[in-house]
Image 1 (cartoon, rainbow, N blue to C red):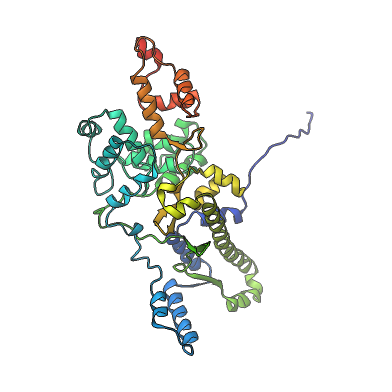
Image 2 (tube, one colour):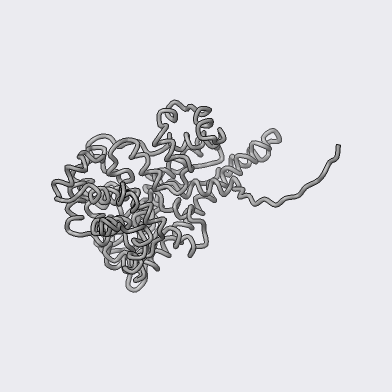
Length: 445
């Protein structure tokens, strides 16, 4: 038997335990991070967690102590009491989800009066779960248009906050969440569309065999699906969740002030007394090493999360100064990819950073994710929404010579001449999504 040594190069991305936890902490909202901190504190005796309420009371007492020998006018104390209150600041102080959804409409350009009429009809046809409670053909008849037009507006509504709004059933509700998450396992959508029953039954081996996928990947996908956001229940007008904006931006004189809202997070520290006890116990060397490492990972992760959010906020102020001055009407086109490139991080990092987080401005509270427009940049530098492009594509096909239907390439050329730069493959994709057959089938089908 002959033995030979072969060498080969293989590039692999290996994430350290530190990076994995940092990314996990980054994606948490304030409420989720508070829960995570408390869970970690229950597991790790070195961690000391001071509840946010206790911290706030302590700070108030210290303020009174510090100010007791000074004289301040009455309005000083009044202004101090007018700080942000999470119970008063629900989703942009909206009375209902309906109002909250209607206020997101101006974020989307190129909407005609008929588009707006359809959108408002759809929003007012949501049930208590925020699922759509009306057939699209009924909407089409009411608004004197066709079902394809209504579907395009429903696609737009399904990009609104909260995630999942406008779903027509439970499967679509899950699929909307997956579509918004760039980190979802690649087979997630297929599992939901075709084999949700097998997922519910955790038929791992059956799914692995059917999709010819390793068991570990199937387990990861099933676990991901099971942890998607559950359907909202109860009256939508009474269940508006309270939102704590992670970032607050305001202008003082000529300077933009960025503040991370840490006031409602507990203080995390390490118990020095307990450290000395474990450190000097020869029987606890390994245990001490592991618990100290875990505690430091948490503290570093929180610090890294703050740093990333601050850098993101600073860049948003730079890129979207008109938005912070004038409000949503002045929002410029912006993609996760563009921001990631400027900050020299992976797109998934920005996706995690904006997930479930809100920013408070002079014009209201906005979901960070809603500031990233979904569309295609045209040659004038403006963003055409996918809904608008689909509508224009449909108009071209409806107006074509039925004896000589437009090919996908001809449609691409026409859109390009109008300043909409998309590929032939993208045109074909949008056409198929609207259930419009190819030019050949339109002629002979």
